[in-house]
Length: 121
Length: 108
Image (cartoon, rainbow over all chains, first blue to last red; front, side, top):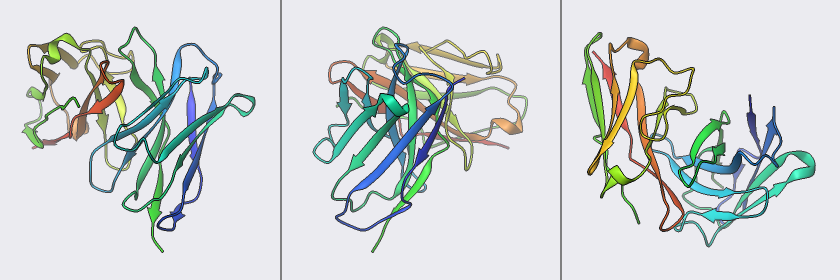
């Protein structure tokens, strides 16, 4: 069973870059069964997909966040990461997810526990 | 971009059937996934591909999808089913993953 764990600073200053890492255990990040993604949830609000990346380098970003987001995969450490620059109203719980691949109908099969990132000076 | 519409809230008595809808243009032609999120926890998939259920999810959870509406049905509702429920699709025309706004299910 895959397990995912987010790590990174819980507090980021406005205009700076939010950086998070997700460590995958119980399976390989190079698996052909999964893509890897990030989803966030502002306090008291709904889920927002941020982006998805494959171990082979295919990347899909939320069109509303594309100009500020960078995702990458680190196969040697079985991790993937998120950078979100110029943060402002980006306070949220950030989840890393394993996206099960199935004929163009992928779903978010496994979730990390989530990490709260607060943007404040 | 593709929009999914869910009612903000729903309520049901224990033992009864809850139906949570997810509206979208011609959603019946897409695969819809449903997630359950209890307070303070990460979401969990309860239905994928509109009507498939992970093995660990009780058979009381089922899904259907036709026309412009997908539906998550929870039979014989229990107090432990009280949670937020989100629908999600992959808009293949734009490669965007889209969530509905979520429905808070209250068990009376």
